[in-house]
Image 1 (cartoon, one colour):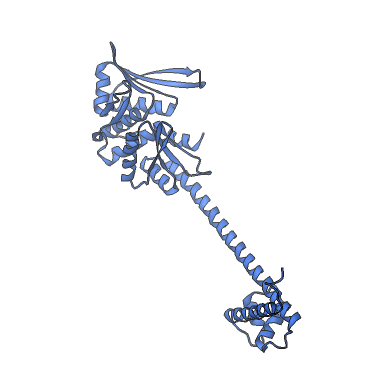
Image 2 (cartoon, rainbow, N blue to C red):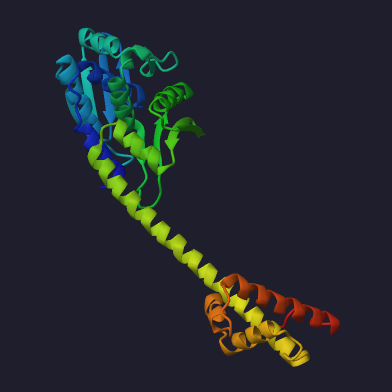
Length: 321
């Protein structure tokens, strides 16, 4: 099972004890499900069709807990997608009106069967907002495998629904963003800390723990890689500097000789030639009168300047390769 599937399984088993939270989550499921419909005629039906058994199970349980309604469940095989479709049906004007009024669902004028939104009265409390987000993700959300990348999203049928979710997530200090994807609007999070917060808000402690463990391991690996890369770069820089120093000193030796150098520069040049792999600290300790790293660096820089002057005088551009 994918990580997203595990999250939904956990959320499906999370039933709020408060009826107002149950209603808020039920409202979110009906509002964000593409398979929610209210059919009116001689007999009125409120139907929810979904391929996700976790959504079907959660919606059936919420109807029973919040409204004491035993919905009918039927299963169909989707021939085109070769998948199973779960249909949860509530019949009768009395029951459908109760659900619609309690969930504060707004009918879609363009699509007679669907719902365009939900009144803010259904999620006034913080706990109800958490339940609403849980229902929205359970119905229309997904997450990428945190081993590969961090991505959390909820697909909305309209910009209004996306804005509603975005504002709600901002209220929990989540930096949710919205992007249009084909005919849908997607509310998404891209940072690990933000997704951890979303899992916590939706009450998915098991998924949160697994996500955090993965995130910690990834950050440790990244930290180690950064340190290794930094050390490798420093080593390369040190080696390149030592090679340049050797080139400069050899050029001075071959074109001027060490006799014209001061005692300190001559001692440094001979020490570097004799110990090409020595560090600045080690070179300083090899001097007749030990000097610090800054003193060693100064002398090597002076030798480099002398070598450059000699090259210019001899018409040579730069050091040898």
